Length: 97
Image (cartoon, rainbow, N blue to C red; front, side):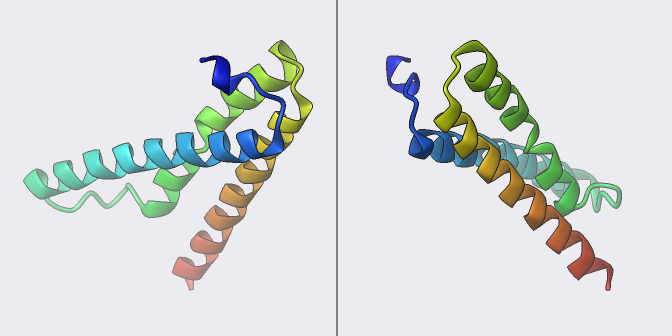
């Protein structure tokens, strides 16, 4: 746990990538299992799962910026959160057309 308490932009980028990617994999796996047994779930799309996987970054960002006052780590998390948001927008408009 002490290794996660560093004020480093690379630590923020790593945390900002790993936590949402893990949640995305878990959610995507659960949806794949449900679809395997019940059929196609029309209301759950890749974009929605991608958007839901950003939520842990909000809690991480709050913890590192307000509680620990680690600005560099918070900037790394914020950078990756923006990249995930842009990826959501690109996927949303690419699939709509």
